[in-house]
Length: 372
Image (tube, rainbow, N blue to C red):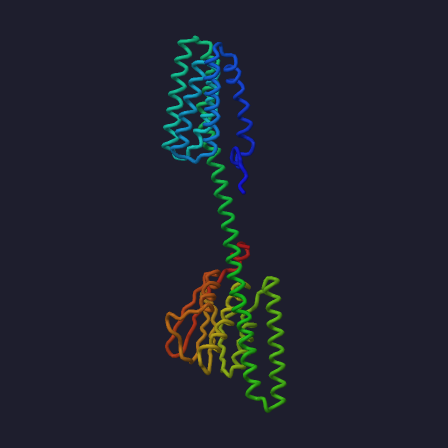
């Protein structure tokens, strides 16, 4: 059940505090010489309260402009027929004028407000002379300036509100990106190890009649399962960086278990790559080896790794059936997303088998240290 609120909660106690200023016109109405004038005065004050409440509970548009017009007419009536000091109620209107966000509406409202004030001053000068004008003049100057200050303050509040909304959206996007990262890490990391366990299980089925080989294969499965457990722990505790050498060793392990022939050619120093670049390149190698075992139907794989001329290039090719141009699963998309973090690129050639070409720009170490 919605709780009734006299004024919107976001304004706090401010709308209630400003009502204190109505005691001045109420005093002049109570001391009216004629009873009929007092009754009319009470009605005008009640109408002012209605406009006050309506503006706080309205959005910008014709409704606010309408209620401001009525409010200003009430102030003019209280000023001309009860007390010239009631013109100070214009501070309410000047504050509300600052709520207009559209520049065109704001200018129209300010100009109309100034015109009404000038007309009221002219009437008061004719009726009461110069003393009342001189007394009210400093207040009226502040009153004319108030809409500009009020508008700037409201713009700042609106910017803060939008900033809060943007921060919430950023938090949501960060959570979504973290979910994607975890899913990608699980796919790239555990997918490799589980594929290895599957291959080793198939090997056991083929050599079931040889107890010694079964025992060795079972030990390999145990090693792989422990590796999977370790990988899960690393993911939970913020995955450590792996090196290309480590991933090449893992790649050799899974391809050997699948009866694949692996050749590795290396040129250049891998130390030129940062830990982050090595980690991403290693995960790409891991995903590539998993894809070869699962989908390529190849018999051999060749990895060429070269570092020089400001770029590290990794070519991973097999002699399998190749792949369709539009066939890109989660693994390849994950590789592209990871490489994008380090401004790397992934090219795919599929003619006589599949060839993945990974290009990673090298970062000069001095610049990298400065960046950190």
